[in-house]
Image (cartoon, rainbow, N blue to C red):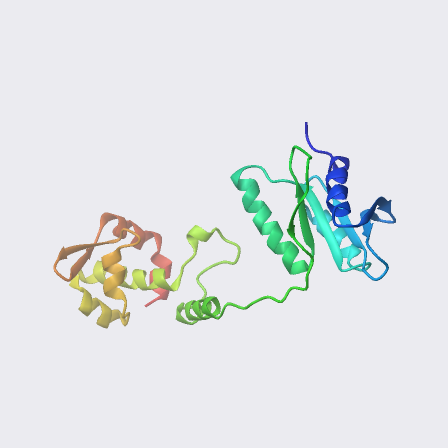
Length: 227
């Protein structure tokens, strides 16, 4: 039987009472409100049978009342449920919300995240990698929002340059390809053969495969733009 919102109440109440809070339900717009001492801010918990945008909106609204706002949901199920939970936990952290889950047994409530101000840490390495890709990519060959498998990266553009040269001149030494198309990484691109377009026919000499010939037709417009 699916867990109802009301099923979450007693496990969460018991959790808070064990920490010395007096707990009451349906105070104003809050599902749960807990108070401990005169000088401490109240705790508010919003209950939902699943993580949703509506739950986030409610919790953010409660931040107008107190900084100690939690959302409580049933425990995740399976691998996909776990992945969704991890993403939702990150979202809660960014919003300064706490996160509680209740297992199907309803015998406890687990706190996975306490409310706290969030200061994001920037990844200089990731930023540099994206800027390098931005600067190295020729033109704007992609349409925003397309499927990731169709994206033309700067790596693919360089591979296409190698492909175009070999298609025109036949088997060629990697060093000559690199010099002719001004792509320093031509040799590793052809040697690694990430797309299955190239094959080594002799030491240091590469040619295109049948799959490479098909790709040359498929990417005809991209190849033309790179000349």
